[in-house]
Length: 73
Image (cartoon, rainbow, N blue to C red; front, top):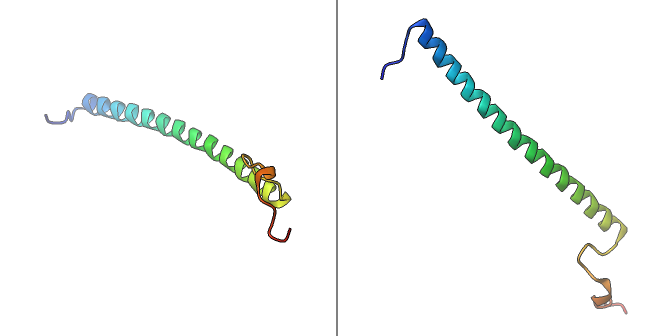
């Protein structure tokens, strides 16, 4: 199939390309927004973990009462 080189054919081709690019842009925007939300959650979790480490508290899921005493006891 040869491309339509008439002005109308060129216009139809450009409209099709534009529609495809618009859809691609919308899809990429959704992906970027999703990734941004994941990154925000991860940054929040890292901040929580850093605070836990700084304060010397046991992390989530650990039970300090079941840990053996340090060797100097």
